[in-house]
Length: 130
Image (tube, rainbow, N blue to C red; front, side):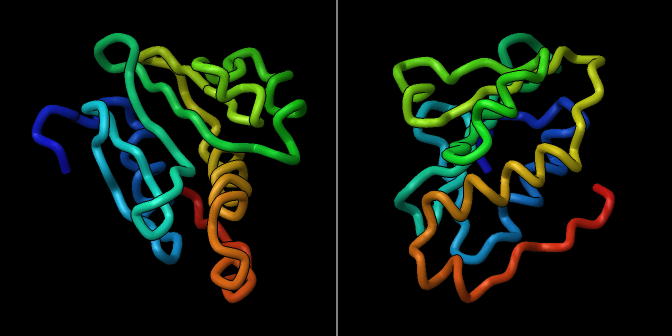
């Protein structure tokens, strides 16, 4: 883990753990914030914070981006990624993130970028309450 990034929002550690539980998941810090990739190549999750204690979560949702964008804390990811189905969820320092929903979206994001054989060999996880 990068010494410059600290997981301060309560949901950040749970999302990191969920991301690292996927087969082939690796953690990288290309811009000082954690990026979770499949086999170190394609990113399926970015975590960050726009203010101390806050949380920003970006995932690729090719099938449910429109659904996710109906949530008040969701918006298309910047830098043109929103056109490819990337959605960013933001939570203030005291906001409670809906972990079950985010973990469900996380599974879609991982499957969207994982090699097809790898994704097919691993059924969707049965998430325990984070």
